[in-house]
Structure formats: structure tokens, C-alpha cells
Image (cartoon, rainbow, N blue to C red; front, top):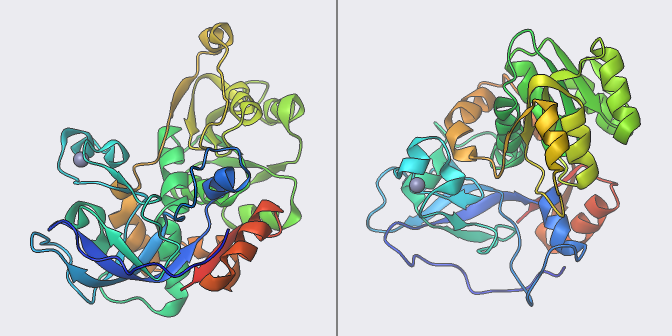
Length: 329
Ligand SMILES: [Zn+2]
């Protein structure tokens, strides 16, 4: 991981915007290529979470204008195609991955600006910027996981994964009215944040022992709703096994070498729904909640570094010294 000078992005398509980033950050999913688990072909720009001020827009852009503070998500989307209108903007037929453009930078070209960017009512005070940056991915992803897991009043929710997405899945579950929220975490600082976000129980065991604890806490049945926010074979099976028959798993950890055993799935009677979160679906609501200070997702950032020190940010997250690193351009 290194920081280097590149040419400033400029408008390419008339539907583009160029934004000056107010803050960027390192995602748990950035650690897959960092660790050599995901394929990387030569030097590649990094980063797909972003908030910033619109510098310039192309001739066809109608809904955002220079000077506005905007939040976008990790897939640019037209927000008009059939998949977008169904609420699956991350499967937009015209989607463009922001990771390939590189949001860990000073400037970013955002394709499909009208369908991708959501402006705040006014430029936010500095202390709200981390929360709005969280909305760009980790909050939106945790929120989608909770919605996909059908979290609602009276439900018991278990959360597998204590990274930023899992912790914000706890926040989402609380906001959506869950009665009981069981966070699975072995780290004291993350447990504390989970409890602050609304967790009612902490389970420190993992794998079959973790499943056993969830069963103990739910009358032997398992949780109604389980959020999976890791993406490994162990975490996925822990999520499925922690779910009661008829229950729902919302899985948002980017799956690496996960294979589901068909017969076990057949007899589990659980619903599985997940994938890359359609963050754009939730952005207007999440921005309102943050601006009105009703939720504070920015607390997941426990280390802030200048962009030049991005390498140290990756290292700190890789070694789990930091939950999530904010990079200041
Ligand atoms: Zn679309």
C-alpha cells in the first residue's frame, strides 16, 4: 500500500460529477486484496467510501450542483432501471464500481451522479462528517443486513462479526425495533460499542460454541434474524446454525470460499438474503437520521490518519488495532 500522485480526475461522461473528498476510509473488504486473498492485477487505486463537496458536474447532471456536500455509495447507479426501482441499486444494469476509480484520494470522479449522489440539506458541521462517511458503506451495509434479516419489533437478532458493519448492524437492529440483540464479539472495545449501539447480550464464543450460546439464550430455537458480516465459511455456517426455522439471515460479508452444504440448508428452513448492499436505497433516510443526530454511526472510526499515512491505516485494521480508519485527504 502506497500513496502516490495521480492526475486529477475530470468529467468524462456528461452524467459524471467530480467531488473533492472531505473524508475517506479503509473498508474491511479492502483487507482482502491487502492480505493477498483477493486477486490484484498490478497497482490499483483503492477505496470506495466517500463524502465530499461537488467541484464540477457534467452537462446532463440535474440533481446535484457544485458546492453541495454529497454522499454516495460503492456502486454508481442510474437509480432509474428496473433493478434500481426495485431497490437493488447495487445491481443496477449500468452500475460502475467506485473501487476501480479509487476513493482513497483527494478527488473522485463519480459516474451517474444524479442516480448515485445524495446531497445533505446544507454542508454539515465537521463532527457529522464521519457519520455521513459511514453511511456511504458500513452503515448502509449494516442497515441492509438488518432489513434483509427481516429485523423488526419483538424479534431477537444475532450479529456475527464485530467489525464496523456488524456494529452498525446492531445500531440498525435497534432502530428497527428489535427486542433483543445478541452481539458476537471477543474484543472488549467492540463489545462496549455494540452495547452502546443497543446490544442486549454479548456472546464471546465462536463456531459451534457460539451457536450453542445463541440457542441457550433463545430457548433452544435460535434467533429470528441473524446478520452475517464477515464472509467466511465459519461465519456463514455460524449464522445459518444460529437462525431458527423460518428465520432470516441477512448476509453482507463479502464471501470468500464459502460453500453451502445443500442438505443442511434444506433441513434448516432458513431464508437467506444478502449480497452487496443497495446502500443508495437507504441513503436519504440515513442522512436525515445522522443530520438530526438521532444516530451516531461515526463512532466506529477509532483512528484518524492523514491520507499520506494510508499504509499505516491498512496495517492498523489488518492487525485489528483499529475498528475503522478515517483518512483525511
Ligand atoms: Zn439502475
